[in-house]
Length: 203
Image 1 (cartoon, rainbow, N blue to C red):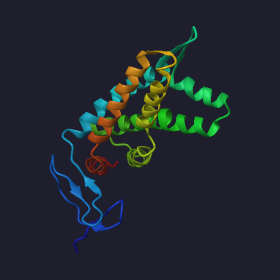
Image 2: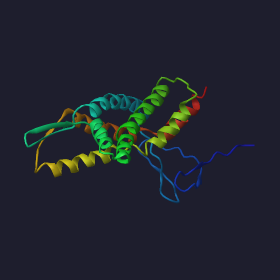
Image 3: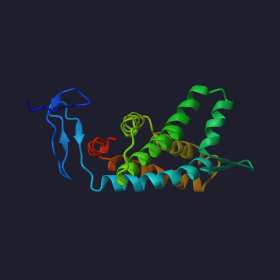
Image 4: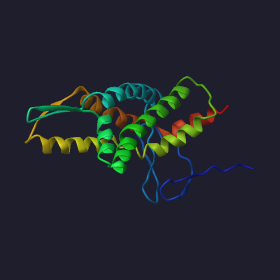
């Protein structure tokens, strides 16, 4: 007796027959239109390379000055990490935790998990934790919101530009590069291909 394998749409739970799409094509749910699959060329190799680049950029983006502010003769540099500490010192603990999770911790975990998974698949190394890492990656990806923090930086620059002198630091350029890399990382990671390869490498 042949075993029938079906997949469920993550958005509306419609049961569907697995489809084999090629690079350049997209598979959508016929009921809700959710994007089910969008194969990416050399997904594993691109994810591996972009993860390494993202991990390198995380350090200057978080630790080096983003913006220098000079007002009434006083100058002060601000980093992503110092912004979180300043929120804690102002007793804005909820906002501080949210900024730390969405702008530092979750993007870092997202990059590390992408690197671990793609490295194992690239070198064909089985690992019993691969499926768990992939599930965590799919959940964490929804909470990594560097673009929201970038929008906050732009708004702050616009408001401060008329009252103070601003100087953009190397950390800001690293942060913008990190934002681009993480965006490319998300679009390059073919989840269907990754799950297929993880199943093939099961120890």
